[in-house]
Structures are given as C-alpha cells and as structure tokens.
Image (cartoon, rainbow, N blue to C red):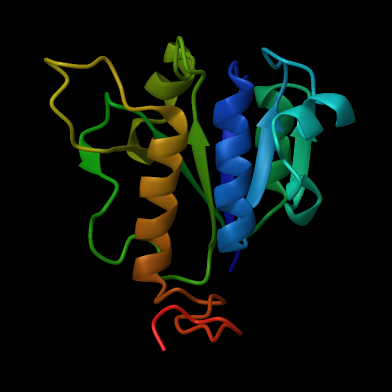
Length: 172
C-alpha cells in the first residue's frame, strides 16, 4: 500500500515545494503532470530551500493521459479526484483502509481539474468541506496536507513512527 499525491499542471513552485516536503515527511510519492508553471532546476530548488527534494519519490508525466496510463498498470490503484465540486467528503470512514495504492489528484491552482475529466469520473471525486462564500478555494499545499494526513490517520499512520527520541529532547 502506497499513497501518492498527484499535481495536475502545478503553477506555483512554492506550493509544489511545500507538497514535496509533506511527501518526504509522510513517505508519499509525488507525481507531477506537465506542463508546469515553473522550471525544476537545481538552481531553483536550492533557492527555494528544497534540500529534501532528493528524499521524495517523484514521477513525472507528460500529460493527464500519460498519468492515467501509468495508474492503469497498478492493479490496486484507487484514484481520488480532490475538488470542491464533489458530493462526497474526503474523510468518510474507512475510505483508505484497504490494501490499495491511493492516488490523490489535485488540479491547477488557477483552474482546477479539467471539467470534462471530472464529469467522466464523478464517483472518484472527494471534497474538503469549506465555506466557499468567503474564499474560492483552499491553498493547494494545505489541501494536499489535509487529505494525506486523513488518509494516514485511517491507515493508522502505517510506516510512520509515532514516538521519536531526540538527543536534545525538549520534552524530556
């Protein structure tokens, strides 16, 4: 069982960097679907302070079709579309407790996921409850963290240590 965060055509490098940090902290694979709104170069990564980029399992896809072809090769794959237009809540009970690989697909910061694609897959759509009278959407990196930690909670934080010991432990 592996968890995956998938970013469709990410536009903002800081969001992608924050999501990569969350992936590194949670043993989550990161999939990036081209085109991007920024360049991924060593210079840009260093400037953004992404010294953990090499600690993340990253898979690049040329387009949505290439990503979907990749997922179709995973017999255990469960694809979840994260969108404010869904009827089902991302935190429904036992949604992620099977032995499947879970792929959480997030749309572009400015336009979300393609409408035709979402209309073809409404049964895969999940939403994070929010009052959208005040804001159009949640920040992409915040939304990714919310969803992956609920997934991990339902999986009893499989693969993550719940207790750490540090040389200079501030609580001991």
